[in-house]
Every structure is written in C-alpha cells, then in structure tokens.
Image 1 (spheres, rainbow, N blue to C red):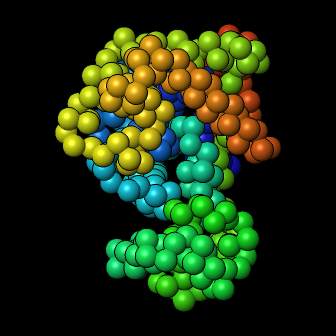
Image 2 (cartoon, rainbow, N blue to C red):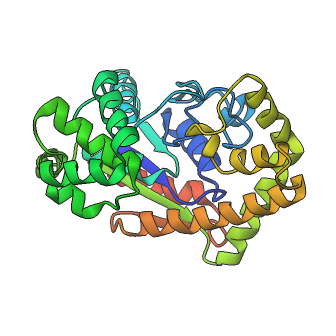
Length: 308
C-alpha cells in the first residue's frame, strides 16, 4: 500500500485546489513542496495559499525561512521528513504537493546529503575562488573528485564550491556520497498524481492569467516591500520568477509592463521544464485539468485502492 500521496505538475495546473479538496475528504494534511513558498513575506508571487484557500487544512513547510537565508534541498528533506512523521503519528495521511521536482524526488528517495554546510570551509573555498580564480578551484576539484568535475563547467561556481566543501568536510568526494545514496531503496512509496492540460496553449493561458492575478493582488508592492526591508536582490529568493523581473523594473531597467511580459514568458518556460521533469517518472498517474470533469473523484478512486 502507498504511504503518502504526491501531487505534482506544472505551475497553474490546479495542484493547490485539488490537494485541499482531497485533504478534506481524507482528513489529511499537506506538506508543501515549493522551493519559494518556504520564504516568509513572499506570498503573492509564489502563489502561496492564503487562509481561505487552505480551508482549514493544516499546511506544513510554508514560511520556514527568511528571504535572505540560503535554503538547500537537504534542509527541505529534513523538515519534510519531520512533518510527515508527525502527520502519520496522528493517524493521518500526508499529501506532498508542489512543483519543485528536485525537492519532491529527493524526499521520496530519502536522499541523505553529503554534509551540512560549514561556514569556515565554505569561506575558505570561496576565498580560493576570489584570490586564484575559478580555473584554479576547478583544477583542485578535478584532482579531488574527477567524476564530479567532469559534469560541471568551470563557470558553475556554486556547485564547484559545494563539491570542494564536501570533500574538505568529509574527506570523500561528492561523487562517492551520491553513489552511496543511490544504492539505498526509496524511503517512501507514494501514490503519484500529476496535473496538466492536454492542450499546451490552454496551460499557458492559465499561467498568463495567474500572472495577471498576481499583479492585481499587489505583487509589485510585495517586491518593493522586500527590497525596502533590505533583502539583497542577489539572494536566491529574489531570483524567483516575478521577483527578479519586478526588482529590475523598480530599478528603472525596464517598465512594469515589460517586466510582466517577461514574468509570463519565464513562467511558461518553467511550466515546460516542470512537465519534462515529472514526465520522466513512469509512476505518475496523469490527470488532465482541461478534460477531467471531476478531478477529485478521479483521485479518490485511485487513493481508495492504493493508499494505506
């Protein structure tokens, strides 16, 4: 029997509404799987459900980090594991809902990441990159971990720094840790539900309409407030779609109208990447929001036979 339910798919496909309706039927709780909804103060641009949309259903892993914080997939897995354990300890079903494929897959697989970041080692590696250049640091990584280095471009600073940091902390290459992780069986056995539209243009129209709704709800003001609070535009959080483009508009680099067009384009491209990611998973039961008259009934039928 399946032990959790995963609802995945591209942005604007209706995942939130379906997960809430399903949770109410199953007396379940929802674990968000969105790499941007974790940030406090970033509500409109991440389509974070408000109290009305949650409809009394407990939601976990929303607002767990400040916008200026670094947040990793490893930290997500740790927090999500704890939330799922808590939900199940109370005899309830956990519904993991979101569109961040890396987070969802890592959670299901139970990946234990190589080592938590340590400021001293990270600063040391960053210092080498600053003083001697990325080529020097890349050559260091190639000597220490040739398998990882082969997969990275010399300009991929973030991943090269992380790989060297892991080597310094653990004494073992990142490629070894990754290989060991793949040998372990998955931690969870989910019922996978995927939402999309058969007509790609219809999905893109939903994406565009969502962006218009975000603007009407005050996304520009939300971005301005974050910047006024001193959130660095270069942080990971502020690189999110919607925030990056409007921050540029507020700096005078483009008009708000141009920013909105760029947000729509970036969101459509992101939806396409999400579909590519999740379609690699053969266990996903795909439902078409533009053709299935009763999504909830379809999911309940699957859950009835497969969820313990």
